[in-house]
Length: 99
Image (cartoon, rainbow, N blue to C red; front, side, top):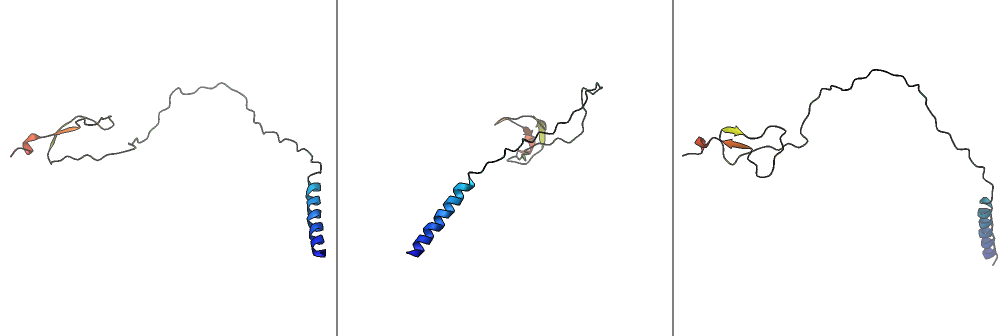
């Protein structure tokens, strides 16, 4: 029985301390003000356009292939052109296909 009472007293004291810990007054923290930078406005000349150099490359490249070998006699599209499905991109010399 004494062990049971000591456990109850221990749990009771722990609950009392937990309840009293939440009863204290909290001092409100002063809000931290944001840092502000100030600069004077001055008129100045500026370029209306900018010239840059660089290398533009396609995001996706697709290798071309034909069902038969031959010499290309006509190219219907250039690099960078948009193409659609079933569009003829190039024509082969028909002399190579004749027997």
